[in-house]
Image (tube, rainbow, N blue to C red):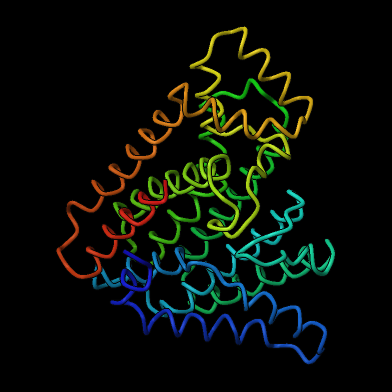
Length: 314
């Protein structure tokens, strides 16, 4: 299963989304800005969020109008957040190429991210739907709060599961939920987006520890390098004896380069990786349950396939 197959029912809509995004980023006379924006366009991602907007609108038959514009706006918001995140995390690789900050310096992605946010809000304002605007603004506020809270807790090796899940729900799942909500104008689809988004982020955190850079298209163990504690690590601390936990925390605090290999090994041997996958599957199951009352269609099938697609990643 691949995204091209999953998105086949909305292929034309996604082409329109890409056209809107390209037009938004090419709306400059300055050649230097056009060069930077083209670099960003050359590394576009999986289109998960705009895909959710369009699938939601199609699945309920009476979803939001101007769906391509709204979908493009959600992707621009996501792109802006990644630009800012890469600066905060000092990331050097994304989609198998240098990040914008690695290539052009930190000032460019901060300014460009701000531009993408404003462009997204402009597209949403064009809809004339105040409730839709409120939903998106609320999601962006949640995203920002979640990111800030997580940054403030960097280095806290005693982070709880509840704190971690709060970060995830705010910084990632809120935009997934909003994408489904503004697309389908449907409460159950919003719940799909929320649970799907939580699972999506836990998978990302798991793969950051256990994945390979070439396959992921970005640096691995980025969370460890900036001192962020994620769910697999929290479960690892729960599964090992107190003495070993103390030694592992000391190793993490020392920034020893070997800590990544140690974490990989202990996640597997302790069973913490299996517990993490069980939690991921529980959220994906909840996401599928939210689709029960949705009328059968090729769009509903794409939702189900999307869940299966991300589940295969770990």
